[in-house]
Amino acid sequence: MHVELSKLASFAKEQGFIYPGSEIYDGLGGIYDYGPLGAELKRRIAELWWRAMVQLHENIVGLDSAILMHPRVWEASGHVEAFHDPLVDNKVSKKRYRVDTLIEEYAQRLEDRARKEVEKKVQKAGLPREAVTERLMAHKDFQRAENLRSRLAAALRTKDWAALTTLLNEEKIPCPESGASDWTPVRQFNLMFSTHLGAVAEEAQEIYLRPETAQGIFVDFPLVWKTSRLKPPFGIAQIGKAFRNEIVARQFIFRMREFEQMEMQFFVPPGTEEEWYTYWKERRMRWHMHLGLSADRLRFKDHEHLAHYARAATDIEFEFPFGFRELEGIHSRTDYDLSRHAQYSGKKLDYFDEALGRSYIPYVIETSVGLDRLVLAHLSQAYTEEMAPTAEGGEEVRTVLKLHPLLAPIQVAVFPLVRKEEFIAPARKIYEELRFYFMTAYEEKDSIGRRYRRYDAKGTPYAITIDGQTLEDETVTVRERDTLEQIRLPMNQLRSFLSEKLSIPVWLQTF
Ligand code: ATP
Image 1 (spheres, rainbow, N blue to C red):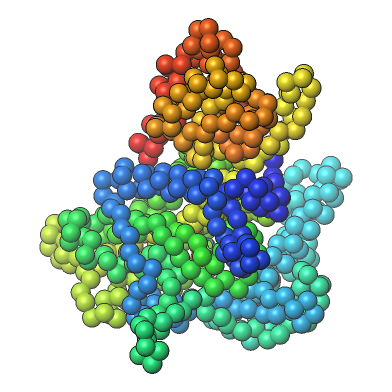
Image 2: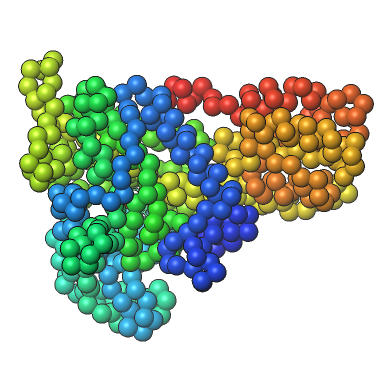
């Protein structure tokens, strides 16, 4: 089932996953807060990434570098000069857009429309499915979409904003809001937030909030390899906040202005980058699937137009409620970043390889995934509405969050069947024991059916009920969230049962 984004956003707010930032002041564009359940979900995803990347990789170490860095870092990295997006305003709707997304989305709409039309005709004529591709290529809307894409790519490559203005006007690209093609000239906009370091205004230095965590890894590279005695191939991983003053931040937590990245730079001897690129592509895709993202909602999308320093680049795309979009980027970045930092800092950043008897600047394979986009991917796939039996023998719609049990913010819920002391006492005892090992909740209010539903919506995989039989033989009911199956277990076996169900499985150890 594919949930609509607006529905998911209100569900996430209601349940305490994600709130608009500064809500009581009417919010702040593109800024979100994680509520009690969201904070837990995010922490679990980050923990599993760290475990797979750092703990279980002999040659990857962690880092936690500062958000604020020397301003020269961003000159060396190219961000001061080139971290721009082209923006445009529609004169009728007064809405602001990123020109590349505006044109890409319009081209996609043209293509989708053409495909639908062709599929219908092919089906009607009783032709084989293969006929679709051929006819699609000949369709005028499809050709127009392709033409728009290639003109867009050429203009972006040369940062030719005037060409983009011409493209918008010539092709009469409509504003999705007003339908009008009345545009201001395209302007460029640097996405970095700046601030000032130092107390005295005149002496304060202009610095930036980092737009990516990667540069901290490059700058600390010589310190890390010296202190950890690693040699290429080896990696440095870090999780941290990044900031981008995105022109348009409209898709909930997909595009935020303050977000969190999980990045790993893998330093390899030149000449081996291709095999490591393939290795990381496969590994990262497998990690997403292991954690429950479904294979048919994931795909690779290779970059057609590479940045000048890149050898190869691909995105792992996930099918979000608004279509396939980038979840993670995997890039083969050559020795560009380290060489630039060597040049700008005047420090030697090459590595002396004793086995080879010479020094070199390592090549880099980067894996970079947005933690918030992962939260959104998991929430949107897990959100399910389905018919379920009621206690009275009827049926009703239940909303259930089918998260992978390892990601569930609350792993176990404990309920006394009724609010009476003889049920409450053993229930509290179980709760107090289990919470030591698992995120456990206790609730005694409302009917048992309502409590089950409440925790289904929070994604809690196991609910334990203390009922009449418990008082006789010390067994309890364990209910499974997805199958609704109920089993009876002796109280003293709960911990080992749950430990087995909620422990990190072998796949993570062989990752
Ligand atoms: P996009 O094309 O969607 O703007 P990007 O190519 O600029 O993304 P990268 O610079 O490769 O993104 O950043 C690496 C990862 O960081 C992305 O794959 C994404 O998951 C995450 N990310 C980037 N920008 C944002 C944002 N504004 N909000 C949330 N996550 C982001």
